[in-house]
Image 1 (cartoon, rainbow, N blue to C red):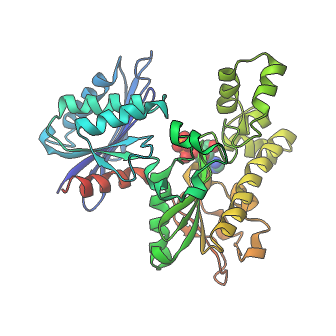
Image 2: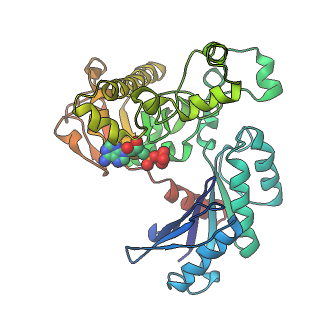
Length: 396
Ligand code: ADP
């Protein structure tokens, strides 16, 4: 049975998960952290047990060598020939990729050309792809894009109301992100609802450190909260989400910061961290709010309020909604956020059950049986989507 490695290369980390397909069994998973920095380390799960070692990893080639060596050393595969396909998460596919793509020289060139849209991510994704190519040149590899699922958005959703030639000349439009996750949970929701995806209007709330909401009609994304970059939309761990753009020059004038410095504040010092003043991690915010900390409470209120409003607007956008889905770290685990997001939505047919809402980290319906709109918690699984796409695109 084919073995597929799903890879996610970040700025200084390389995560991997090895699947046996088509049964989707996870043979192992692990991560190389702090690549190119001091105190790098490697983690891998062997028979469910975590093995961790510190090592010196100066670049992605060494990280890839290490991963492949360890897979054989721990006997998870016999030889490198056991790997039948590799799937790479790639952040930005621009308007070129509306589906995953087999990696060829041409594909790699296009991913590199799209770097202007994702300067922090695409070049690193390419590094990861090339590092695997060097060691396993004959193994088919597939790129799976965060933006691809949202390429189905109609013009009215993806265009900003700016001069139209900005779109034509500079590619200024909404791209959206977290596409692999929104696709996975909406497909899974259709299975759990036992209804064909093509008849469903779904609102998917991916709430992790980054957060985005998607309106998915008939299995296609028709709108999403993230935009040209992942900064737009709801408030996040450290990102502001949407703000009045006129604030940028105003903040520059008031604080003496440059445009880049202000964008850095919007990306790294805002959201839950900015409002609470003490943490970007929702668990800290919840604990503080429960103890009566006013700024923690406010951060929680702002976070939930934006999501609540997106749900209302996407229900209007689709002229109704059949189910709302919560996923990712916060969506899967925080009954507190889910409650605040859902509170008051009875007017549109959302009747959720506080007892069922206590669930953490597993698939569940949290609506009352009579609720016209169903509410689901579905742990996301971007890696399995990557493995499935390798099987499909590489024809394995
Ligand atoms: P990333 O976008 O980095 O992949 P995750 O999906 O892992 O993020 O989500 C991280 C967020 O999930 C953090 O804010 C964390 O506090 C929150 N989270 C994780 N577990 C819990 C929990 N048990 N209760 C509340 N929040 C949680």
